[in-house]
Image (cartoon, rainbow, N blue to C red; front, side):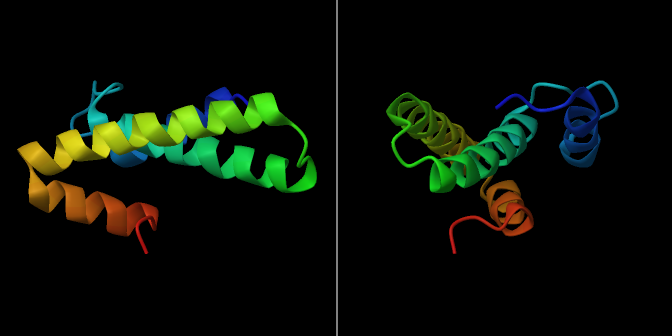
Length: 89
């Protein structure tokens, strides 16, 4: 469930904090959210794919840790990010 290079560039340019930023926590959360969404649709069609389900849970855990880091260091940025991504209902 890898992302296409063009889609990665769109995500990076949409969430980067400066022009050379490719690995900030915001960008990583946005990339993980995209991968989680793609994998979720895959698992709806392939419910017995347990190895992909495990990978999904690992990605969700990684995103949760990154969001906790952002919340700890900059709560305003955290709120803006979750609103923009449409997570945490």
